[in-house]
Amino acid sequence: MRPRALFGPYDRVILPRILTQLQDMRQQLCLPGGGKTQIDLTYVLNVVQAMMLATTTATLVLG
Figure 1 (cartoon, one colour):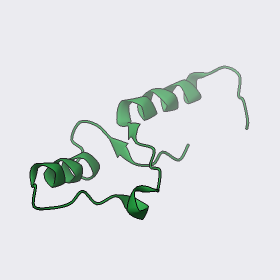
Figure 2 (figure 1 turned 60 degrees about the vertical axis):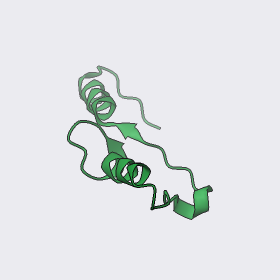
Figure 3 (figure 1 turned 180 degrees about the horizontal axis):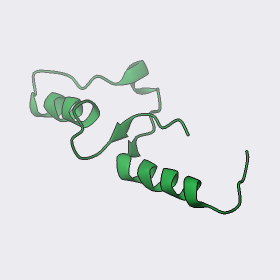
Figure 4 (figure 1 turned 45 degrees about the vertical axis):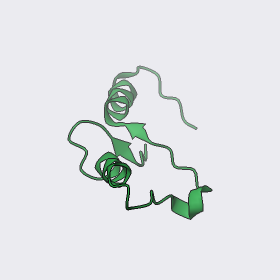
């Protein structure tokens, strides 16, 4: 697994930065790639659950 752009409780990077920009109307919301770049946000507890399932599954699926 290679999770990217994690957010959740105690997040100090992604959501606080977005919320700060939205609250401060003098700033524009910076969108990567001018808004054309897609970013998949992943909730941290979903990653934890996926890792737990991956380590406890009886049959290993590769792919």
